[in-house]
Length: 452
Image (cartoon, rainbow, N blue to C red):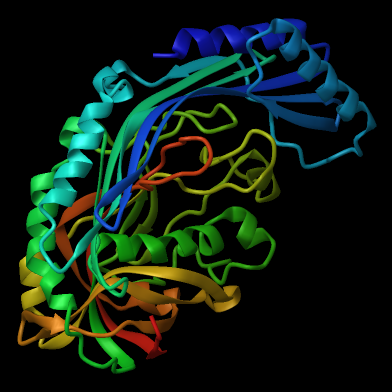
């Protein structure tokens, strides 16, 4: 655990700073990752890193600098002085976020698993090797196995001290044939031992053979079963465009003025659930406010947006602790949880006379933010359902949908849910998640076939 080291760095910055106010964000990472493609392990990475971000203010003038060159105290002092110089020549910013006031908030030791933080490289490699070895012909194995820890300390000159320490492990297994026909299984967990390669192989063994002879795409409006990865892709756009108070205030969200109105299906209930022990606990936001359960949508009725102190002040209310940065204002929900239903996953499929099961979407983009319309494509398993049974697969299609329509057309929700997170990363290992069930949606619009 890097906690003591991160605190030491933060305290040193505050001691040497000469600014009116100072915010220090120190992030520590220990992670191991194995990538494999064409049934060959081609990348092994191990990262031990500490990064430091310093934000200083003189009145309404501010500047932020970042570095991971922190071994010599002289380097840290140099970064502080550089930040102070830049702040003094910066234009005034009347919309600076509030500096976290005095207080202390830390995650409990239950959120951190040292065996995952220091996961043995041989365990990561052997898990990947097993997936490769047990991939049936004619498929080849593609994917990622990873595990590690992410620790963050937030400190301010006003006396706030916050620590978030969590561990995470991920498995992404994609048996693919001819670089065209594939099926994806993805798992995320709080500890490496909670990954289940047996379940991944079993699920892929049942589904992957069905993708080898897909029928031609049939664009149109379909009843669909959206598995958690597909749900997560859509939810991310709803969160970003529709549910941030910043988007509402700047006129991008079509949900403005609709608090208390029924805008989605009564089968759709959405929470911000930062303290759920199934997920990666986030006890404070980046303005040092204590986080808790927020009802965002209740049986289709919109209840709240994501606020930080800047956006809350504009609306004459209190923040609900959704600041994702201590340096600029764009509040977001980061621990979303769609409430589970009362239907078993298999029964959800059985309830479909004719429809499609979507494993996931990709290359999704915004078409029109004012109607929450997005487009994208299916990938890694688009399955045909007839008379309540999966009977084969279909070639991929492009979708073009309004998220207002999608989440208003939820006709069923599974009682099972999954922890969905990102198994690969190219910057710092900063862990966020959603807890998502499978959704049954009516009238989902597929606009055209794709060439992929």
